[in-house]
Amino acid sequence: MAKAATAPQLLPTTVIGSHALPAWVWLAREALAAGRMGQIDVEETLEDATRIAIQDQLEAGVDIISDGEMRRVNFIIGFYNRLKGIEAMEAPRRLGAPHWDTEQPFLVREPLTCPEGLGVVQDFKLARQLTRVPMKATCPGPITLSTPLRRGDVYPSQEAMVEALVPIVNHELKALEEAGADFIQIDEPNFAMRRGDAKPWIAVFNEAVKGIKAKIALHICFGNLNNKPFAAPRTYRHLFPHILEANAQQIVLEFANREMGEAELCADLAQIKEVGFGVVDVKAFRIESPDDVAGRIRQALQYVPAEKLVINPDCGFWDTPRWVCRGKLKAMVEGTRIVRHELADSA
Image 1 (cartoon, rainbow, N blue to C red):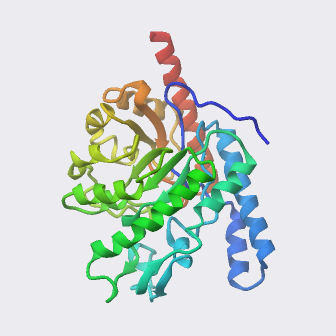
Image 2: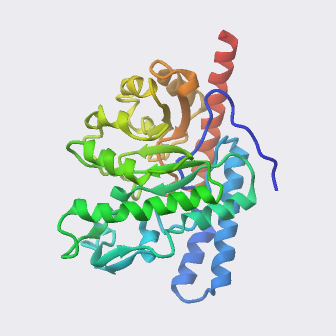
């Protein structure tokens, strides 16, 4: 087991959560769907995939890694096998390019429960056994978890259904903390994908993290399903000023995919929180150079002090080819080192 490492004092690098799938995992999925794999085969495959995800991050030099989310079907769909009281529905569209309307929705038939948890704890425990380097656990927030759910007649409103998911998420976070997680990221891309007053969303988030003592990050992006964003226009402005009230020590946002648009909004955030700043475009096929990354970090430093700035990709690498993912991680780390040296030389 590797010796525990300490993240650098300035500009620590991290990931959002998901890592690119090795090619053989896709073959294993086909074999699983065909009934050719037993439970031991499945567990071995997922453990091996997690090992590779961790190793890729370590080889790139990432300071704070994740488990790679190898056990999930995709960002959140795997969790619905664990939720009770729902029934799978037909996808609205099956022909043509996969997009947001080709994903399977679920009809709520009974009050929502999750007696065995969302499974995030098991994933974290496995990854924690494989390495002792700094690691963050990732968990979907209640609003994002509600995305494919259709409330039917069980809940009187969408808000009531979301409220039913809050204790499920809170229980998972407490179990993660008990398992040793000292840094937990809550994924709520729906904050940016929706429009309207953000105050009630932040209230839901704060209720979901109530009682958690671990460091909390709130990740908000514009969606990344099949490498396609959901939100248009892509803006964070409607989240202010209420996002400042989120009970999170770190806010994680995407900027590289938007040519660093709205980076100035981070000035307000940085007064009271760390800012996880997206400097690698996971939706672009081209691998950035270290100089590209360094230039984006320099722009971020115009608004965020170095001691408050965390370096990460825009989003997860689930829909990115693995060789591209590895190249982008390496460029992110090398670009960060360039700026660290510049800061040290100017000190």
